Image (cartoon, rainbow, N blue to C red):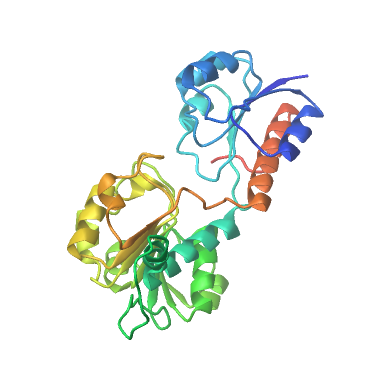
Amino acid sequence: MSRVVVTGRVPEAALEKLRAEHEVDAWTGPESIGREELLRRVAGADAILSLLTERVDGELLDAAGPQLKVVSNVAVGYDNIDVRACTARGIVATNTPGVLTEATADIAFGLILMATRRLGEGERLIRAGQPWKWGMFFLLGSSLQGKTLGVVGMGGIGQATARRAKAFGMDIVYQSRSEIDSAIAAELGARRVDLDELLTVSDVISLHCPYGPNTHHLIGAEQLSAMKSSTYLVNTARGPIVNEAALAAALREGVIAGAGLDVFEKEPTVHPDLLDLENVTLVPHLGSATIETRTAMAVLAADNTLAVLRGEQPPTPIG
């Protein structure tokens, strides 16, 4: 029987699967586990089931010891994991792609609607008890029909967001490292362009690319200034893809029309300049936050863990 350390609270269905075969040490505190406590708990672990709030680096891997076989991340993104350090130590790293695609695309499109139709502003106005009256020019937003959605990163979530946009009558352009399947491109009427063209032709831009050195501050002052003044930017990928200071300045100065953010550069901290702006919708990393999706993510992470401990190929290895 192996020892599995779970770094945070996860749905019971995943814990039950792990406990059926192994000893499980699961963190159940209301707050994220502290670094020192995490380093202490992983000592002697054969497997670590990690949340994106935990940094899995060489220090942590060494604290676990040479018997560590697998790190299973309960997330599709894995910028919190030093995959190279895992590989160097013969440790398998896994993630949970696929199961959160639809839920995250729902949030992306929800943010598109909130930003373009100024729903956050209207809700705040009513909750603040401010007087209001229907009028022809009251809280006018922007329609989506006939507009262009630019998708940066046309993987599963990007494609799911594009399908929603297509149903709303939007045209689709995308920037991605490779062409998508021709049948999917035909279904969506999607056209591949470079980032520079996407920035200039899109009415709404939705970010779905992975985060790494090549995408750090992919959207900064230069890219924002290339957009139309009527453009809306939505980010449900990773916070540091966008330079928040530059975005706040662009929103304040009318360089772009609005934005919707589910992720932030230094979560849970939000850049203070964004908090004072009415033309940005801010939600606390809710992309995969449905009961069904979070359960599926945790169960997939458990399946990855169990497979490696059995000496089998995990369902969704990284790389």
